Image (cartoon, rainbow, N blue to C red; front, side, top):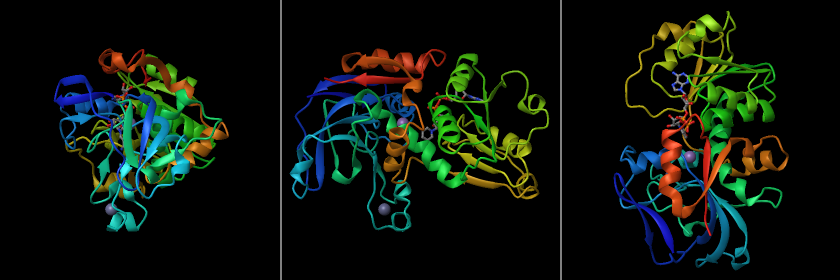
Length: 336
Ligand code: NAI
Ligand code: MN
Ligand code: ZN
């Protein structure tokens, strides 16, 4: 089979590899579509502290089960599935409280173990979620990025009363905007980004108002409006302090970033308004929820997609995705 392998940082190859055999409890998936994420680019360039090399990248993928390991119902062969990349131990403290995404022995498919930029990939059977016929093949790899929005929303509990502010209109911000409007019916979703093209995408994805904060700070543009719910999907360390200053009393703030840089914030700016701060990593069993959102048309994954490329052009696809945020959002690899 052909697989996209990062041999070591900055060394991407398409390799011929032997077909993997599914181990006990695993399925093998014949991958059909896989979407590119910022973290794939980070592994390529050696900027992901969790990655081990050589690695087949890709954690957003869809395909058909073509073989099962011992202990797995062979009736699943032929099933269309999207694969949850979060592999957890099932018995540590976070697993025991329903937070497998921060399992002490967390393994992420495409990061810690081989992933979906490949003609075939293996995964635990319980990570392979059946995709209903109403979700087309070419959009099913986008279930995973929407689980990030589902996971942070589960902490923030958006309501129709909320005025939400989303920082960043990249793929993560856009999935959050779609969920806030389409699933939770949030009254108003405001979005800040520095690129006009990304702000245009935010509008197409449901934002009620957009703000370019590249020159004029947001505070000067919001005219006293105090968001009650803020999601940082831009993830610059300076954003938290600004978000706390802009927030309404009793607001909730959700953080998605992984920066190792310190961010400076006073206790007073948080406690005086009794702000709630949540962080969210990957997803905890949110595939069924997102599949249900897609089935009933609450979210529109097609609005995120700007490009499809065949697997053979993976390097070109990842380079475009990395270098051109003005024209690219989700870039999807098609695998035959
Ligand atoms: P992206 O880079 O495509 O999007 C970020 C957007 O934020 C860009 O459009 C950029 O112009 C904008 N931006 C940058 N600085 C800004 C600022 N100060 N104010 C307003 N907008 C600003 O990235 P993507 O894929 O949307 O991911 C966003 C972040 O989410 C990344 O930092 C990534 O590491 C993180 N992430 C976290 C996950 C989690 O589970 N916690 C999962 C996936 C991504
Ligand atoms: Mn991703
Ligand atoms: Zn665990």
